[in-house]
Amino acid sequence: MNCQLCQKESDKYREGKLSDDLRTKVESHLQQCNECAESYRIQSIAESIIYQEKAISPDINLTARIMARIENLEDTGYKISKPFIRVLQPALIVASMAAAIFIGVLIGNIYKPAGTVISRPVELSLIDDATIESVDILSNE
Amino acid sequence: MTDTEIINIILQGGRNEYRTLVERYQSMVFRTCMGFLHDKDDANDLTQEVFIQAYQSLNKFKGDSAFSTWIYRIAVNASLNSVRKNSSGPILSRLDLLFNTGKERELSFPVYDAEDPENIFIKLEKSKWIQNALDSLPENQRTAIVLSKYDDLSQKEISKIMMITEGAVESLIQRAKANLKVKLSSTYKKMRLIP
Image (cartoon, rainbow over all chains, first blue to last red; front, side, top):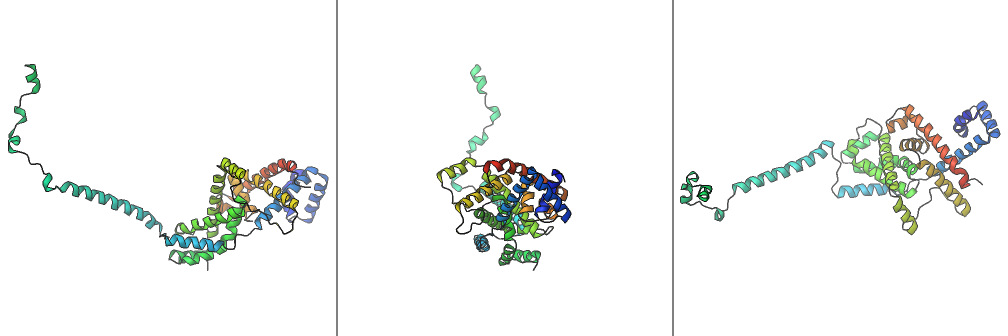
């Protein structure tokens, strides 16, 4: 067995998934090759650390914490809604705001307070601008 | 009751049924978070966030994939985001260590009563050693190896979660293992991990 094959099979060897024949070959190679033996040792340590981390369980109160958070969310008004409602809600808000602004401007234009209407004197409306002499002509003279 | 049936009940207002889903999947979500964060408290907090996020997005779950696949995706994305967030502030984290203002970190491996302090130290060093090696992997290799090693998922399941082919998963895991081997070997002698 060469180093390449040994390293390829080392995971299965560690997990005890090799046939007897192959297992014997890997063991024999590991005894002879220092480099592969060291590599195998390193991998085994790494696996054991991962195994230790995997053995840690989540907090026993985790489910209760999650459900409490969800309860809080819903108490503050959050509700799971269908996607179209989630899209429709902001669209309706924007549309109603636009409508409110439009109606506001419209009413603002129509409404004229009685005291502020400026009536134009009749004399002024009779003046024809075309008949007034140009200031330029006067200044040239 | 199947996951889909539970989800339908929740969407019709049966909020409390979500507890069943949480109890069913919290361990696997926690293991995934642990594989990325290597800290029990952080993994607990992130698991909580994953389930809240999943609850808020439950209406987007179409049932095309299994609920487990869907929640794994959320867990992987949340973990990667958390890792990115943590790695973007190394100066702050160093200051935190310097002034000891951070919370006391819980060891990411079980320590038994009356254990020799030297033994604990060696365990801690070993733990950091593997964490650093895992953290140095590119995101996709890291995701594949975490799902494979921490969650014991098959290549088929990983391919569904990562939305890539099984061949691509195999390739990612092989490259991750090769990279880990190089990284672990290079720091092995310096740290004198093995007596």
